[in-house]
Image (cartoon, rainbow, N blue to C red; front, top):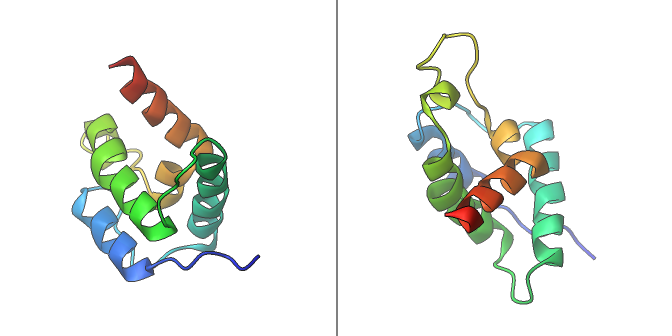
Amino acid sequence: MPKPALDESRIVAIWNALGCAKHKGLTKNARKAIEKTYREYRKGNQTPKELTEWVATYLKHGFARWMTDHHRDKGDGKWCADLEFAMRFSTYDKVRNTELAA
């Protein structure tokens, strides 16, 4: 089965609008995190969204609502979230569980 297509420029533009670490493109680690988390998302969803649409929705409506100033480097100035962090399954799971609890 071929890997699903990902509109990298759309995802990077959405990410850069969130105010976290800026990206010019997807790193190898960010791409791996997206692919792994998307596989997990698909397992639990009978009618999954297409990859780019899923990532865009998650970033705009999941991660963006969950993150704090700490993720935007507005706290202690020592760390800023990057796309790989946002797309890790562990982060996705925290965001999803926070939304379910709300």
